[in-house]
Image: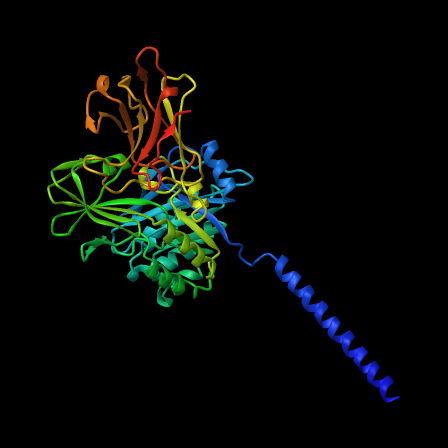
Length: 472
């Protein structure tokens, strides 16, 4: 009897344990399949842009699983108790897969920009923007003394649109800053860059766009925010001029990489660290219509790819609902990495191919990978600057070589610069090449009886890739 009772108890206990395991497995499967309360996503800010998205951009965004972009439609400037549009940009039409939210930049130097009369004028000016899509985002760098007033203004503005979000300065993670804002908006977008009003030279080195230590601290502080928030991360590049004493002279606008990477008037003052490189002008020169004097310093700051990847991984471990990149890359050098590169920060390296065109009188350089070839921010041997693809023949067969899409073309023989008719090598110079992009040479004319099929090529200043190859 004892044995039978013991066996029955063991059987009952086994069934209980089995049921418990089944319940736990069911719960685990449910948790694995359940959607998070706030799905993590990627989005972009689009700033001061007149033209709509191209088909190529829309395809790249879809491949990155981007469903929302925040489109800057204009800037409202406050004077006395009025708000007037200083700039306007058209809002493109979204589609089923891409939601476009208008963003309005607010600028005021008035001591009381949210007085009753001024607030009424602001609400009236924003009325049409708030109705465009039913959602609105405001971008305003409110000084701390105005945060209470700004919060009360947001409470009134929120009544005019279905959903209201705002950008936020990094230090607004403090409880005293968040308190007047959080209850009056639906979401916050802290811009986790531009830590200082003017980048300064500390120990002769400019501050990087992404400082991993500062980024970790800011993300930790923002994780205490109970309101939904997106981490605004930088993917752009900037140029800042400093005089010989290290005092900032401001930023350069509308520049290109060729001006920086290929300039012989700039000497490398310090090696690149976290995407930041410092140059010194050895003679007066001009970068994008901005004049540099002798011994002026030029800081080139590009968001470091590894630091950016680490920042995204860190954001995923916080309470953030996603990442918003500033800004959507375009053809401008200042927009930084391409959309394709931002989708492959850790698993792709640029690989270039060079081939003769179908016509046989030019060549095409292609970056066939989803990764950007980064700007060549270092000096080559002697006077060589930037990257180059060298085309060589055994005899001086070149009669003409035009740069085409390249920044320039040089010619040489036996290691010395010579004019084209005496050259056995021509080099097409460039400073960077984004993912999936191509550069085409101009006309390459050879001596009668020869063709490009007898030529060979190699890359210059491309890390780990300087071997000669036959030109296919």
